[in-house]
Length: 203
Image 1 (cartoon, rainbow, N blue to C red):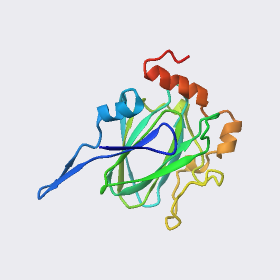
Image 2 (cartoon, rainbow, N blue to C red):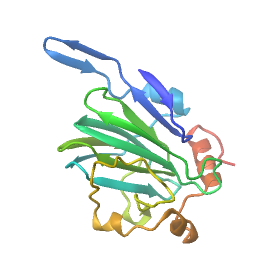
Image 3 (cartoon, helix red, strand yellow):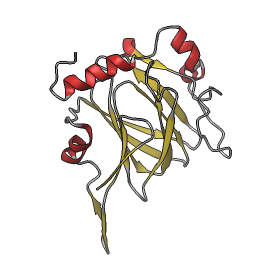
């Protein structure tokens, strides 16, 4: 499995080796040991989500309060999406930086994003199926969003796809508004939390 760290620290892509034969194809789309080597700690899965989206569906940018936040391992089982990770941790050296990876049923790569990072994806095909392994269950009182079309974020959405947002995502604040309202996670708090996951004291 090929592992590549993204431009946003705390996010990686994982491209599996595929074994095709006349019957079809076999692959290991998630390997806990490989992920643990990249992170320095294991991923404890407490919830698994699955979404089905029509072309143009834009979900995100979503994030959760840290601690405990919600780390995600994201995999596209059918169709294709453009998956985007955003550093929204206040005080981070890469605050505001984003990276995008195409997830599809051809290369079959996955993306991991650490707690405190923002996540969004745009469905590039109809019937795009996405599965998420999550470190924490959904907690509506601690979940937030940033408008995915915020000009300040300048996310690389393709111009030939008309975005379709939920009412909640369409009403989300800009990055600067979320920062002013104190909604964004602190980089220092995230770093302390990552340290506890690796067995440290978090101090």
